[in-house]
Each structure stands twice: as structure tokens, then as C-alpha cells.
Image (cartoon, rainbow, N blue to C red; front, side, top):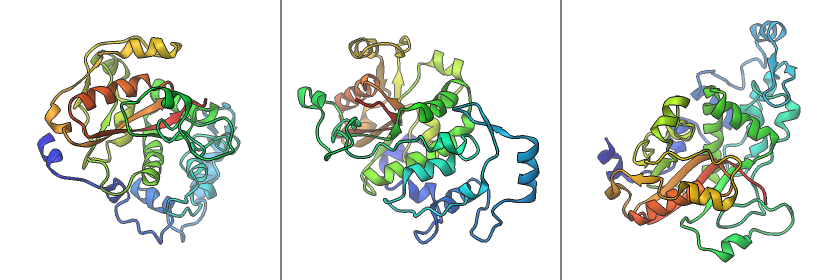
Amino acid sequence: MIEDRQSSHVGYPCEDHFAGVHHSEDLYAGIARQAGRGCSKSQPTMQLTDIFKNALFPVRCMVCAGCFHPDESIRHTPLSASESVDLGDLFGCLMAHHLCQACARQFVAADSPICTRCGLIFKSRQGEDHLCGDCLASEKPFGMARAAGVCDQSLMSVIHAYKYDGKVQLAGPLSKLFTAVYERHWQPGAIDLVLPVPLHPARLRKRGFNQAWLLVKSWAAFAVRDLLQRTRRTPSQTGLGRKERLKNVRGAFTVKDPAIVENRHVLLVDDVYTTGATVQECARILKKCGAAQVDILTVGRAVA
């Protein structure tokens, strides 16, 4: 199976992920149909069953924990399937049944100005993209890193619920957000292979799933789950500083079959980029095994 994936140069993930969606259609209608909801412009904004359900069983917001009635009109907001799609609007649509509108609006897209290499989001929102001080001072083992949004309370609450509370139903919406970010930063056919940052087998057994893999498993044409492996169990990176994080993951990863990554443009995916210690170590190993270039895509990105 891996050999088949290796031999074919694949392109845009949305060709599979949004199969049958034309640019003249609104983006949310496409992803809703993929999810089996059958959303269309002619469909009533809210069905009678939804009204009764929301009245009897209000949803609790993952961020503020307040009860709210999902606004079905948000789910059907037309969004253009292009690079100009507002990630905040898309996030609001995708999270309409998980976050109240006030908390969903807190989402901040990882837009310019950012570091052209590591994707660091500068606190100052003035100016153009440029290299950050860290990337100027030290060479990175990857080409570029990009993310969907800033690691603020809204996005981090969603990621925490998904990753630690077992809310695996969030994988679908986050995967669609992932795809929209991919469309913005990579050209069709640019990526040969997509690899999730792996968990150690012991942690995988405890958690029950790899959160990075669920984000890209629908990109079946070129996503490979077990090629990059974690061979050493490491303590959690939470609470560690940059130097401690780098030391913690040093030598913790290996590539099962180096020939598959040789001369390939690899996209490494994970949930959050904080200091970059984990993804940098993965990228270093992939480059050592012959990868032509390694890029990084995450859901969240820390702010300088």
C-alpha cells in the first residue's frame, strides 16, 4: 500500500476532500454535503426538528461553558471556495454546534504579518511578512510552517477538547479548516507526501487516537500514518521551555522506510506549533533520510 502511494505524485487534497464541489458553489455547501447533511441553498434555514431539539437540549459552549441555541443560518452562510475565503467565517460555520457565536468570533486567523519561515505571528499587526529573529539567528530544517489560527482561548479550547477530552467529532471540522489553509499556501502538486507527527505507542493506546492523523486521514491519496514513528517515550512538552523541549525530543523519531521520503516534498502536520521543538526534530530526521523539503502545517500557532 505504501509503495502505491510512493509511486504516484499527488496534487491538491481538496480534489478528493471536496470531490464534486465547483468553484461556483459556496464552500460550506460542499463540505456539508461531504458530511452527509445535504445542505443546499434551497434548503430551509432551520428545520422544525432543529427548533424543538435546540429548545429541549441546548448546546454548551466549549469555551465559556454557557448554553446556547445553535444558529442554523450560520451553517448555511455562503462562503466562496477561493483563497479569499475568510477563515474566521469558515471557523464560525464549522463550529456552529460547538461554540457560541461570541466565542467563535474570538478566532484569529494566522494571517500576515508572519515570519516567512516559521510562520510566527507577530504581535504587531502592522507591516509585511519577514523573517523573525530566531529564524535569522538559526537555520531551520524545514522550508516553511503555516497554521490556521492563533493559539488563543477560543481555538485552544477546541484543540484541548479534541485532544484531551476525546471529542473526536471535532476532527471533521478541523480537517476542513486544515484543507482551507493548505489551499492558501501550497500549489496543486507541490506536496508528495503528508505525514502526521506520531505518538509513542504507549500514549497512542492511552489516548486511543492520533489527533494529527485524524486531521489528514481523508487525504488518503498521499497521507501515510505510520511511516514516521516515535521510538522513545518522552515526557509531555507542556510547561517546558524551548531548550528543554528541544532536548526532550532529541532522537525520539525515526523513519520506517527512508526510501519513501527520499527526494520527496513532505508536509508534516500536527495540532499546535508552540516552540517548534517537536516538528523541527521530525523535519531534521526526514531531511537526514533524504527528503527534498519538509513543510509544516498545524491548526494553532503561538504568538511572539
